[in-house]
Image (cartoon, rainbow, N blue to C red; front, side, top):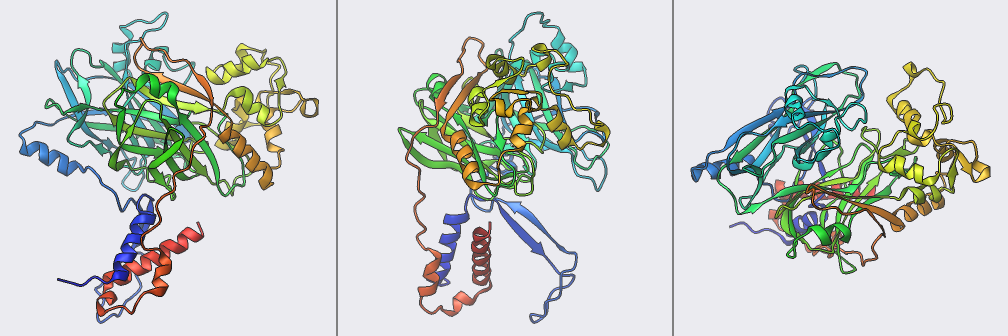
Length: 561
């Protein structure tokens, strides 16, 4: 039996309390030969780094599948992939959607896990897939819909997503996530008491695979990526589901340039939870935090009765390239009337122009994908700054040829400005687009660049985008005022419901007033190191030295973060 000195216990305790939920970058290196008598040589090129969640539970594939095997439970595989999607070298960002037919299952089965199937363009190339979502499609139909079209779409290669011109209207009914993967993830396998339903008499007949390709280096590729879904006829105790929460993707999500840390928040409030959650609430078992390249910190807050409860997920060292599913140590019960708040902090120190919400990785998102049970018909729960309040925050009240109701409709329903005003009215650039970067094109094509201010007169004849570019973002007081107004002001909330029989109107609310949760202090704060008694020889062990060095490095990185 070895004696573990108090200081060693102290270090472990401090590490667990302060870095348990953060993403940590672990450095590794090794030499060509084993060191002899402490004669360490340089590691040369044998080095690297990897982001990891060192602490916290994880439901591993091998454990789940071996447990099923011990109980003689057959596990089937369903591969859902795209076929020969052409990613051109000129495409920096591409969202591609493909309709797939569900496996023919007369009885309900349970999805117990899924993993990504990623194709590569060559032995040394990296996959272009940034994230993927498999959505369940409802039977909702629109005027002019033909039910036979679904079988035609199954046989087709797919289409560009979220396009008014190229995406069939019926695909808007594919909104309920059943599998989610983001860059750096290994997929997800569910605990033994939860399964996501598939098949049966009332199960979905069609699914939509959405893949976001990120191609910053201009590769030419044909992609075959997708998911491998593991499912079983042996039903688990609870039907589970996945829902999306956070900030609705829109130009009204704004992050100023030159900021060390700037926050956006998305609210899932009582307008959704009171209507959709069962009386006993839902239990969240895992979550994935999702932002783009400017994301630095992400927190999933939980508020009840004017008091913030312990954070569901918190990562103060968020890594855009490592979006692994977070299995919760303890399931979080969210009751009707509770708030779920996705809180994102961004760094734009090296950016010269504002960053907006959008689908490109040069734009931003603030989303959380939550796996929970029991399953309900809520597919998504979002919020955004109301359109009118967004413009008024920057002192703008009217645009030429458009009233504010028209402007609201453009943002809320992804409208085309040409439906409201002639082509010759809105601002158009005369630049040669061949030499423009994708970021330049995003700005040029932005709806904000097509709205010309008429009121107030001191800003008239500017596009709203040029107006934003002239604001004093380098002034901390101004930027803090904007941040405070966007967070603590009004929010328009949306509930995306898969059940056609339930309709929940959008609602404008204020940010909830609550007492912020304060994490209990560490039982062994680092200043105790200075007052500790002399260490025994056991404290000089290699593992103690490793922990001490790790603690010092983590403390330094926290100070200079």
